[in-house]
Figure 1: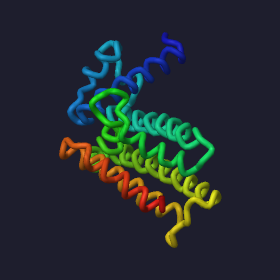
Figure 2: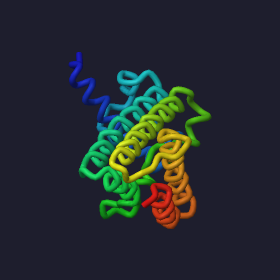
Figure 3: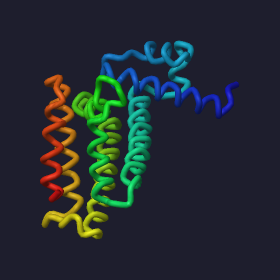
Figure 4: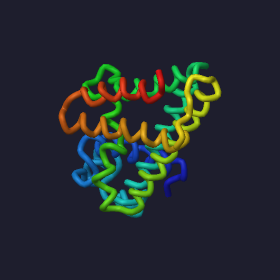
Amino acid sequence: MKSSRTLNDNRQRVIEVGRKIISRKGFSAVGLNEILTAAGIPKGSFYYYFASKEAFGTQMLEDYFARYLETMEALLSSVPDATQAMMNYWHSWTATDDGPTPKGYQCLAVKLGAEVSDLSEPMRLALEQGTTRIVQRLAGQLERMAAENSFVPPPEGCLVFAGALYQLWLGASLMGKMTGSLSPLASAMPLTKRLLQL
């Protein structure tokens, strides 16, 4: 009988390996055996860890957003100046870490949003909840900027404005994937600065 620690470690390994593969290929194109083989987990044991591929996908998205929000929090808390911290976050979307693909293109919300939202209600909800938390954190940063007098909140409020900014970058990332070009992300940056009154 496997210990609960071993079960959790194996489940987490499947999630992490699966996320890397799915971020390249998409959810529907990846079979369970491919994930299990890459994770070094015996074939046929998938259902020991997850009730279904959909349950795996939902857990993968929840794990992704939890990690994303940790990284986002570190970026937004990295410098005392709220405006600089906000711009550091947007610059992170275009960072490549010496790889060929900007991080914005690796976003699972961009990669899977359209694909799985019509296929799986639990996965759609995980996407909605994860992106909602991102927008809420951005709204908090805008409020911090306003408190430092570096931003005048628009009439619609910080939460709606934060949602529009996030949608701008999601759209730019999607267009970048479609065109194979960095120009949509490059265009998003000066527009973001104008919207933030910089």
